[in-house]
Length: 160
Image (tube, rainbow, N blue to C red; front, side):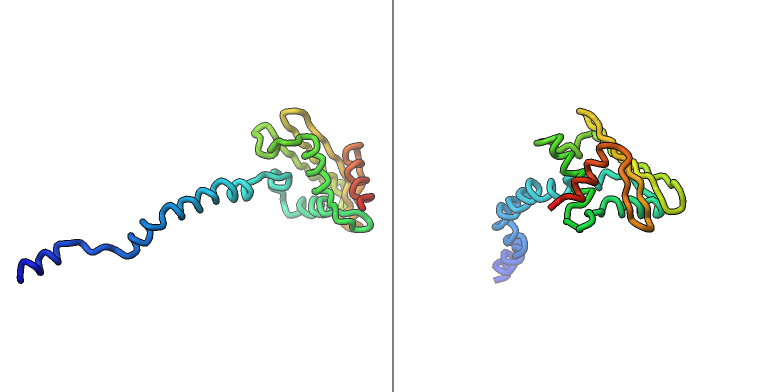
C-alpha cells in the first residue's frame, strides 16, 4: 500500500491550462498570423496627415482650417482629401507614403495678426508638388498663391 501511494505521488499532475493550450495552439497561431498579415499593415498604413511635421499650437490652427475646408456649400470633400487623392492619382499602385524618399514639408508663417501663409511641399522619387495658400483665421478665407493650390481649392469648391 505504501508503494502504491508513492507511485501516485511521483507522477506530476497535468495542468488543465497546458492541455487546453496544447489542443488549441494551431488555431491561435492561425488567428495571430491572420492578424499580422491583414490587420497590422492597415493600422500602420501611411497617409498624408501622418507625415506632417510637429507644429506649435499657433501653427496648428491655420493648418486645421485649411485642411478641413470643404467649400462654400460644405460638399464633403476637404482640402486634405483632395491633396491625398491627387497624390494617389499621380502614384497609382504605390505605397508612396511608406517610401523612404517621400518627404512632406509643411511650413506655416505668420503674415500679420490674422493671416498665415501655409506651404505644403510633397517630394517623392518621381517629382514634387508644391502648394501655397494664405489662410485668414478670423474669416476662414483661403487664398491660393499658385496654380496647384488653386486647382485643389477649385476642386473642393465645385465638388458635387
